[in-house]
Image (cartoon, rainbow, N blue to C red):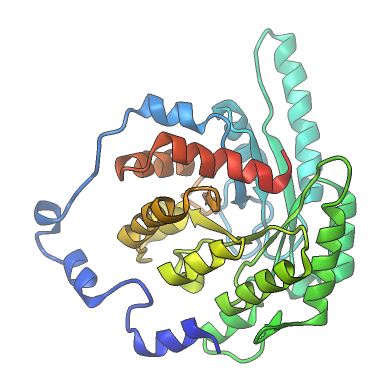
Length: 350
């Protein structure tokens, strides 16, 4: 059973947005009655916190396929370097990205030498990538995963996104890739877990995580249960857990954390950004859930990402907006540092 799909047949505005909240959002006097910007935040404090941040889920051109107008990967890496960020992990729905990461890292190293010759300091961000298991790479293709890991700089394997059965069915279509039937994982899913577990045994400390991507929450839980039953060394991230497609309820969030999962809170699913147009995000739900989980479980299984790189949403400005909003909403600098630096560093072996 897919509870989210079932909920959407009964819940008119999704699993988080209520009729009461929608009425508030469309109030003719909203700016005068409801606007609450939170605590004022010093921009210098935001810039300070951004130094050392790791984003394990961003996008960039020329990859990105159907979404024209993305900022380029190179542009994003230069901006992140100048902002003092530590590492970026690029995702693409259709192809491997860690090969591009290797090329960009070389380019940034050359920039560093050129600037040093002029007496300028430039510290390159670490650039990584991975592979998303959509139909363009053969779906749940263990050989594609093996090749991606062999290329180096591969920090994540994302399960299907555009071709996940959960997403395909949510769009009212049939088919799509499923990685579990109830509690039973497919043989392809098991093989990929075995590849990752074996890779994470390396003596260099390199790590590659699995991202649940757009498969159903039930499939994600089945994966966590299998990993725990087998004692596998594989970390599992849950992508943008307050975006409606992959949203988790507070109960689902607690269950995933208790089973060892890591929940990603994404800037572009939590904070309004210029290119959103008519997309409604669950702002209060997102930040209340972050605070609730920190209070109940601590920040050690929460990860801040931007998922940025859309037209109008460059990752570095996205980070600044996200950090500012987190602080304004009462989330501490210490907890932000855990979620944006310590936890992602552990997950990707930095």
